[in-house]
Length: 125
Image (cartoon, rainbow, N blue to C red; front, side, top):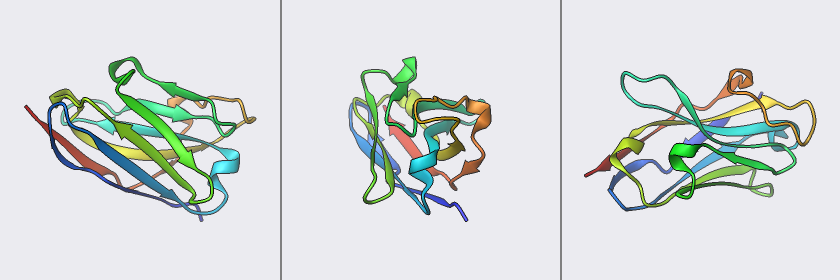
């Protein structure tokens, strides 16, 4: 059974950094897109960054230049490095996975079907 467990959230001041981790079970990296989503109170869940199974990445505009997605296959762990954080980054952050059509396929948000429990990130001004 595929499982995702996030960690690394917390409280940070504006301008600070956090690194989120997502420990994945099974062979999830080899056949799945992996993504980081976030949901702030009263807002819809949004994709922050994603990685195709072949390693190509996508970072959305609100966090481009500040956030980096990466993975360690040996540790079956996905990371989200967040730098120069802003109060508007405050949200629950979720790791997710989606079966990929091929290694270069960047999955669409609606295709993600395995989710972690989330980790809270709060950025104070």
